[in-house]
Length: 387
Image (cartoon, rainbow, N blue to C red; front, side):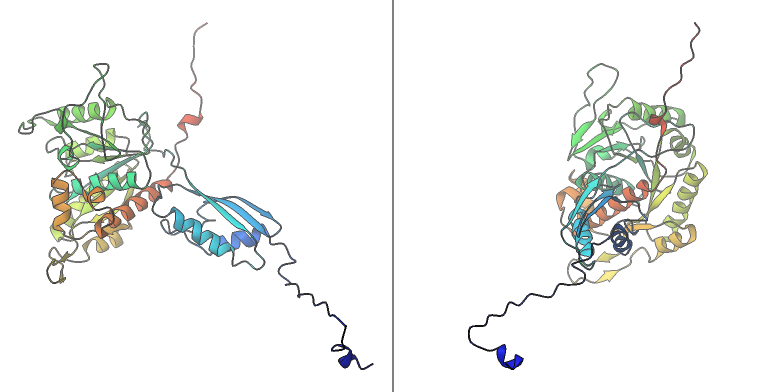
């Protein structure tokens, strides 16, 4: 019988088997997984997940892959994006089966300069500083603290501007702090942030006519006598300037890193450079720059105008090798919301300005995660006794 006719002969059934994919029969390897992860970058750190040491516990069973992604910064806004991108990337590996990625956040304490001890209950201290007043330092500090909290961190806010405290107003705080033992004080809790300001301890119209040593002592008491509770980050709103008080405070406070706030204006940038150099002299890492009032957008016609100049922070970034963490517009809402006791991050959490503050917060936390870890707790205390 003709073979070709036999194929179509009545009563003959053909059993057709699908061709197996060559990739389906070959198990993928851990090396393939690592190679794929090296081609994918963390949206906050800008590093791939392998060199950034975020990819952990990679397991390959046949063609199925599971792994952990451990982020060192609060990431509530991006954690789903990270998981989605990692799974999508690993599924591009030929023959990949089920892929699962468990994305976690772990914030740890980081070392400060030698001779300065970390504070109990506080992992990391972020100093927010400026070379001069009037550049939006306090507004940046309060929104940074609220943004870190919104991203999932435990956050404290210390108003260290003894002469001109403003955080009690910006946070909408009132009433004296409570003290259970008569020696320490409880921080005020608002919007998920633990806050303390000398403005809560004095009358609003009382001027602080104090000399430098008194200011330093007052700050240390606020810092160490407040019962901070398990903070991942404490944001410290430092006084403006670079004088003796600021230098002393920078040396006595266990600062993990500093954020410099400026405007594009040349005069502000001159002072911001001084602030940056001050932190360098006392060995405090610069986490980056925040440029306030970078552009004004007309609420009527949408016209953009650089009222205070343009490109100042970018030029400073290039000169000193520090990152511009973000640029904020000159927006009347930011001022109004801070004055009303409900800053932008909580007043309009979905606004463009709030998103910028959150981006800045994630970058600040990511830069801290790249610093040296504090290992002091890992070593036992040695006590010598006479017997």
